[in-house]
Every structure is written in structure tokens, then in C-alpha cells.
Image (tube, rainbow, N blue to C red):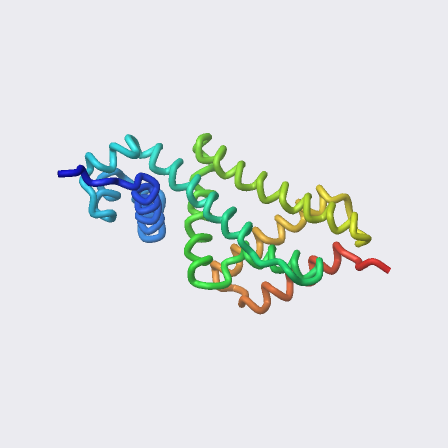
Length: 197
């Protein structure tokens, strides 16, 4: 009889989903090996095989969240004008639907926990730097296509990230609607970019 083949990537993805569910339900403090075992339906020993400590669980879940966000952004079908493509990319980072809202809730919990945890802060820093580098690259491309930026691409990327962070928090708190967030995003982009003449 052949031993059962185990797809370790699928198993890790299952664990990441279970950790995110725990975080949304009970916050970072609610993540323990025992709670993860209950949520995932695995034994504590099986969880420990993949993730031997609480710190490993949290770091892994944060890394998986970052990887999922990056994969989502890379998969966007950008076929509009440069302005439309930039707006589509920026909108894709906002919690505008149930799935993105769930991911943003987890991300925000990690941001809060990162304040006192250097390991989590490092993972969150990578996410920030990756998004920043992508935005700088997009703004440089727009400049090369004749668009005029209201500032240096690095400063423009910083400004856009600040807008995204603020809009995301306001959306999660329910103080603005998705339509208001999208309109604010468009105003921010239009202040930054002027089309070629």
C-alpha cells in the first residue's frame, strides 16, 4: 500500500486561512497552537510539525497574507489608460468587498501587533516596502510616458500609500462608503498626475 501523498503547500495554506479566521474572531491574542488546532481540525502535534511556536504561527500568517496580496495585485488585468490602470491597482488594495475587507482586518491586526514585535514589524515592513517599490515603479513609468507628476515618484508613492492607509481604516470603521473612498482616491491621483499634452 502506497503512503498518502501530502501537499505541504496546501496544508500551509489551510493553516494560514485558519490563523486569519482566528485573528478576525479573537485578535492576535487569540492565536495559540491549541486554538489553531481547534480551528483547523488538526492535532496540536500536526500544527507544531509545520509551525512549532506561536511566534512562528504569526510570522507565517503575516508572510502568507503579504504573499496573497502581492499575487492579487500581480494578477490584475491592467488594460486601460495609465490613469485607469493606476486607479485599478490602488483600488485593489482597499477593502471594498467582503474578501478584501477580511484580509484588511487581519492586516490591521498585524499592524497593531507589530508595534511591539520586531519580527512582525519586519514582515509588515517588507509589505510596505514592496508596495512602495511597485508604486514608485508605476509612477516612473507614467513619467516616461509623458505624464507630469506633482512630486518626485518616491514622494508620490509615499503620498499614495498614506491615502490608501487612511482610506482603508476609514472603510473598516464604516465612517466612509466605498464610493466616497474611490472618489477620494481619484482626487488624490488627479492632484498627483497631469496627462501628457
